[in-house]
Image 1 (cartoon, helix red, strand yellow):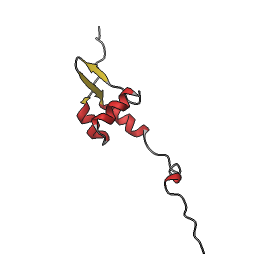
Image 2: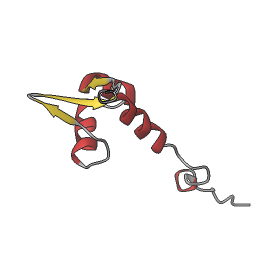
Image 3: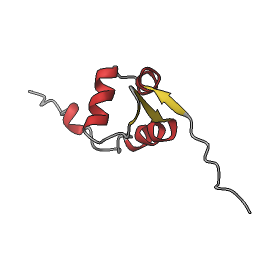
Length: 78
């Protein structure tokens, strides 16, 4: 009989996850609290799956043509 399939999970601490995302731990906690990123509490520590953090990064990719509001055309006065 074959046992349950082993799942390879790489866990990240909050400091490492925040560093990977380029945000502060406080911002990381907000992402978790708002449900944007899954966090897991084991006793007193919070861990994140590296695969979830990488998927969050990919999901945050900016679609071309969506930032026009950040660099509005300036009207030239002749």
